[in-house]
Image (cartoon, rainbow, N blue to C red; front, side, top):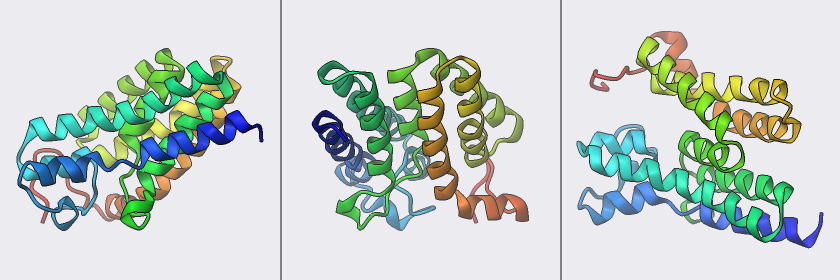
Length: 197
């Protein structure tokens, strides 16, 4: 692995591991976001504080840190380092060393990486996610559907490197959603518009 790829790896992980959801909720006076709802640090759980503005801010910042890592690496080193940085950012978001490797589920970071490396794929991902949410009202399932479909789309669009990256990142996302998968199969996964019991 070249030195530029190593730099990109550390750059991506460092930016990706910033726990914006946790920090935003604390600064807004909601305490430790990990102690409510799902215990996750992502936008969906921040929404459970009752603040849509904080949830949107978390979503955008989680996208920006991953996409920003990929763009910065692309500017400094090139295309392949940008994929490495973007992938490392999502990994850092999901497994931040500062939080004992217990982070978010990676969907917002996934969108951020796609937006940075291939905006047409990002648009496809957004359409898939939105369509799934409208059809099922399950945020978790929509993330899984998107993470599963995008590698296939990237491959048929002639972007094999991005197909490999998105497949690896999609596998991480699905792994992070394993508890949600169990609840979906059991019919107990909370839907949008219903309160979690």
